[in-house]
Length: 389
Image 1 (cartoon, rainbow, N blue to C red):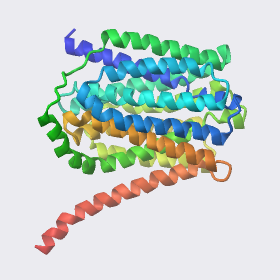
Image 2: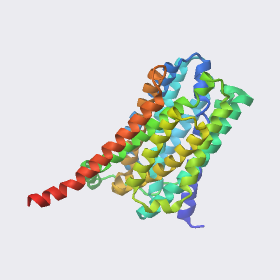
Image 3: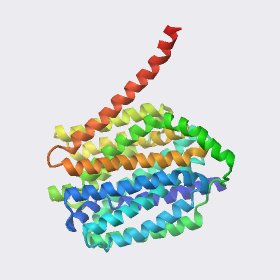
Image 4: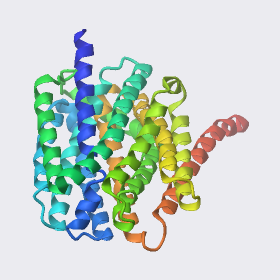
């Protein structure tokens, strides 16, 4: 096996286990917080504070990753996260969860952009980039199918506290593997020329990525509604954590179906993003206004979600120079966090008065309308200039 292939395999293994471990708590956290006395508003605040700390970490992480390398920003946050997961199992109040969840969000803020930046260094062109991100997407989707069921089942057998001890142990073992086997793709040289390049590309990057980041915000807003509302079925309707975990798994199965269609990556990323966001928005609206089974609608949402995520990464790498990937992915993660912050806060505050699914639909379709209007406006400008001449 070639050294490059072997190194990339280690990245995929590490990213797979990170996703697997972190998603185990998806059906676990909300009912666990509820058992500690947290109301729906408090749970929304916890998720919002966590996402806010994650956002701050993302903004800090991007430039540091570009300058100092990736591995250190993968290993250290994983070790910190392992310790914090252990402490989750010892929490005795919702206040403890606010602090621990916020600290964990900050630690993980460095991990995800660093991992994506490291993976992007193994692509020589956009098509390879799309394939790498699709492989990651498939692995991530498998974790999305397995992890919620595993988390829900663990709670029923060993309880909430021991489930978090299990998560912490798994993260610690993955950290050890990462330390010994993961390698930085490139040596990082910091000099004046590099810093000047960053300044030159800053404005270009901001203008090129604004539409992509706007779509990313809407996608994470919709995702945040689901992450909040589906586990809350255990509180509202008495559904078991195992069953809510299975519901998330249907979403994962839908995503896996889309990611398995590799020919999709030949289409323009922005078109895939718009199609996926429109589909997600309409499917979430159907949860509110139709009697279709929830698992079927989540399967459909997963299909559109699978269309979005690889396209998002490809769109980022197409629009930024390689030496700016750390910053671009850092900002993307920050936008993701902002979407979750906004979604968690609004959902927790208004769910007793208006359906969060309806607000999610409005957010998604508003962004789609804005992007389409912007594209039409950009297309009309050259025509108008021609007529004036």
